[in-house]
Length: 210
Ligand code: HEM
Picture (cartoon, rainbow, N blue to C red):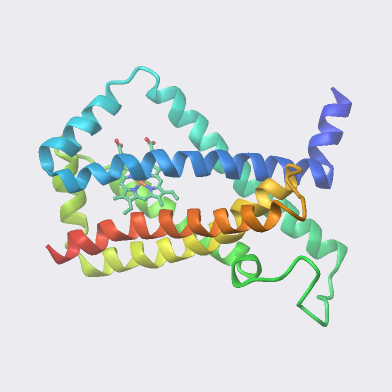
């Protein structure tokens, strides 16, 4: 067992856990966005989808798995960041390093913390709402508050920024690093980040303008 803990606690072990959990969370984002797009189909369509989801016997296990993924991703991200700071208390004088610094890569901790704040507010309002009999009405009513809708749009900008670096960086950590393919993985990451951020952000914008 000792070797397992040593591997998981090594710096590469932590990066692999962060990459794997991050890429699995990308899978969750795709399914969550696909489900949310039913909102555009109207009350009956969205509530029908939400009811089918709630009646799925696998949902409690999926929710626990999702919670563990978020916790693992956040905890390893903070440990890796803290470990990097301890190893190099004085930052590089020159910030443009060989990996190619982008706004996305430079703001990972900041965008991640904003997303954590978003998640707490979001899950509290939507998942733990006292009355969940008409989820469509609940979501539409929440976005009538322009401040709340604006907070969502800002959080989705942070999500796009986070994914613009996190997506390809996750693949790179898992070994997909090749002069020929890496530029394509980076392009795919940018397209994925833009599609997810715009897809989610379109909902509060549309709902608040109705
Ligand atoms: C416009 C954007 C979004 C809308 C309208 C939306 C809507 C919803 C709704 C209605 C629920 C409750 C579902 C249910 O209990 O059956 C929910 C739950 C949840 N959402 Fe979102 N969501 C959005 C964006 C996001 C984003 C970007 C993330 C992650 C970064 C996220 C993470 C979650 C999580 C973790 C849950 C709890 C899942 C569960 O326990 O079943 N959501 N969302």
